[in-house]
Length: 482
Ligand code: BES
Ligand code: MN
Ligand code: ZN
Image (cartoon, rainbow, N blue to C red):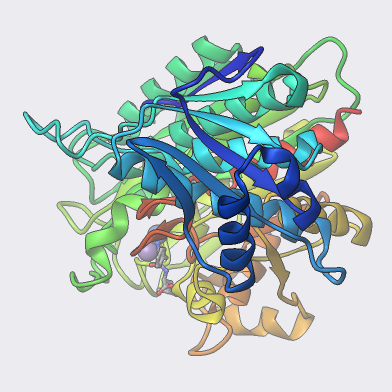
């Protein structure tokens, strides 16, 4: 993981590549352009030409002109700055530019922060398994910001968020050959050491003692043992009496079990099935690093889902941590089984709110693609509204699906309390209905199967792991900490 440095400066040195930020045509006069340059820039803006730049014998001046339309919500304008920055970051890397100074003419430090966030988030690479090749390494190392233009606290926070997002991306990009459940626990511990959250790891015998039948059932076909991870950030000045609990699906590899997945475009991506766990670990990392005044607990059940040896079979009945029984009719619907144990374990905290994040269903991904998060749950409308607002602000948007009573019929079993699959329709919802049965507190379920791992870059989200959930949760808890 490499994170672009933010350097505060007093003045921009001659010879340094620059990026001008404008949001009104009148500001162009203040940039010190010549008459010819001004005419050119104005014309280029009118023709919506992008990218817009001058190359003075190798010294670049990039121009971002982002004039808000009246009807644009502020969060859309923020997103536009991030996106523009990602475009410039690509150009910098192409041109082997190492340092870029931002010259803000909008007079709004928020625009500078959003731009810096776009630079940091897009300038990510996962190079751990490349040997010898230095050509492809991103050149851009430092973003310079004038002190007078900077909101220093906001920039510090941006750095924290980007670093935590990268930690989550790295975890998701790691293949199973490195990231087994036990190795995931190690990584979580080392994040906790860096930022100051507490980590406790339950091993297989402790998981057995706790009778986590879902997690143990899914793990049966795997040569590697499961883990159950408890992360906790509990500052003295916490604003909440009852903790917030985050639950993350930690299936370090989902082969489907005996209900084996096909390879192309399916099993070949399933190292991403612990993206919920990565989001929870990344969020705790950022929350602890920023010392937010909230008490947050993270619960991460982790295992592979494989068809080996003693694997659980379709038709098996599992007795869960809650004591309820589940008839397994598809071993590929494993996420809900391990989450159910964690949700049931969460009851002991008497939580104010539980949020689970999981790459849970292809159905959620089919419904809205990678453009957002499908969510549902029993928390109050006001909580849902707050989370949706955070979702817009960080542009990890949420859309609510219903948990109507009728859907509960879909998971009735002939022989057990419930079965682990519904019918051919409403797959994201029946997974949610299954989880709901293991909760007795305000709860929200976020299905991130669509946006967690993407086929092509989306602005500041590179191809593959996106780190979705980290920025969302950080923003949500930041608002709880005031
Ligand atoms: N991990 C998958 C869901 C998934 C799909 C994540 C695509 C990321 C991208 C999950 O465990 C799964 O296999 N779900 C099944 C459930 C079905 C068997 C009821 C699915 O969605 O097909
Ligand atoms: Mn599965
Ligand atoms: Zn899965």
